[in-house]
Image 1 (cartoon, helix red, strand yellow):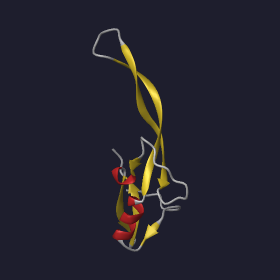
Image 2 (tube, one colour):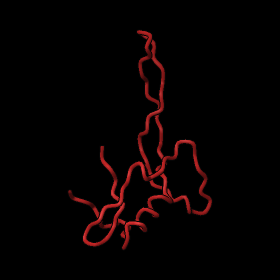
Image 3 (cartoon, rainbow, N blue to C red):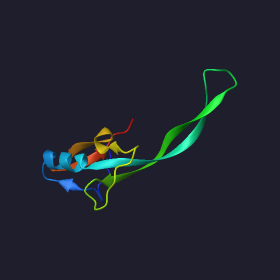
Image 4 (tube, rainbow, N blue to C red):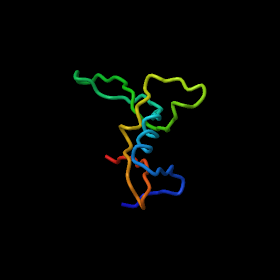
Amino acid sequence: MNIQTENAAKFDTQEACLAWIDERIVRFKLRMVKTHTETPGNYTYVPQKCEGSIVSTLNEGFKAQEFDEPLELYAAPTEQDGKWLAVMKVA
């Protein structure tokens, strides 16, 4: 696996990496997508995640928003060369 590490936060312990992940959320932009309903010929619009950014909950002025999700849903600690990094999970 090729991991981009140039700008990554690196930690000495897995616990420190987990703490970093735990204090962050992913804030998604949503777009409305047209989709069919169960009734033939009818449709509705549903929100779909299209872009996300990682935000620290420790930032001054941070306010949670309705669609924020914990970073732990998308990242996990991974050890590389004796350091721990938060690596995004790919589905």
